[in-house]
Image (tube, rainbow, N blue to C red):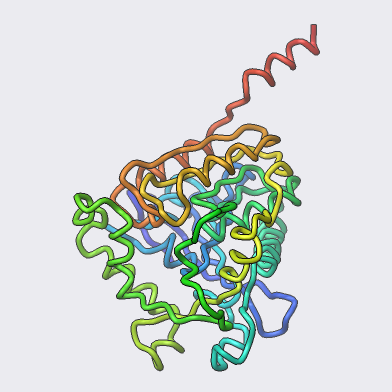
Amino acid sequence: MNHSINGTEIVSEALYVATEIPGINLYVRHKRPASIQAFTPARTIVMVHGATFSSGSLYDVPFNGMSFIDYLAAAGYDVYALDVRGYGNSSRPPEMEQPANQNLPLVNTDTGVADLERVVDYVLNKCCLDKTIVFGMSWGGTVAGAYASTNNDKVHKLILLAPQWLSDRPIPIDTGGHLDAWRLVPVRESKARWLNTAPEHARETLVPEGWFEQWADFTLSEDPWSQQRTPDKIRASNGPIQDIRDYWLAGRAYYSPANIHVPVLLIHGEWDIDVPTDLMQALFAELTNARYRLWVEISEATHLLLLEKNRHLAFQAIKSFCESEFEPETARLVGRASCS
């Protein structure tokens, strides 16, 4: 299906990637400019979502006629946004069709990394590439960071939006108590919690009029099973929350950022209480072996900044990072010295 963004015709298609389990397939939302048939590592992006909402919900709701994925495709990028199993339009594990209290927490970070790896390999093979840009948000930032830390040879650049890191205080997504296999998320009731993370004076204008309702309708449409049983709620797996307890709140890093050698961009909203600024600062300090690292702080934005009024500031920062051919001055000096 094609549509136009700012005069650029965009090709959109749904892809499915098989997993190791028969019948469990990963949905991949693919968009690219119609005029371009061949892409390079610098113009190809694989995206993964957070612990509650799918890639479609976070990256492809067309506010004012244009989503984040639309923006990237119109800028000349070949974009692949995957839904980890159990999310969005990907297959649900059979345990998600059963009562939540009958199984342990589902779809942990190990599974997220494995699903990302399958989709990256699919994209590289499909496009005859050796590398791609990788993007992840929140829990998806953990998935993307962990993947990059052991697959530097397949990653051109890494972009992490509000990624998880070690915390010595409660993390809002974990409300405590026993964890079932999955949980129900009251989508239409989430607006108050979302807005309350911003200062009181900014809450009325944080999300433009009509955007929340558009986002909620889109998000709910991706889980028909829940809509038939619990209207206005979706299922979300609890594996990522179990990992918060086993890793981030236990002082155990799930992966080593020092093992990432590619360029890294961190994006963060100043009002993000899910991943506070000091956690971002601590993670930034751990990226000691990245080819280079940048941190962009978006003003008047929360954890869901890609769905808010200042989303274009993040869009532009990400596009600039992807297009930059920056080389650290020290690297150039070393090069000159070796040639003298």
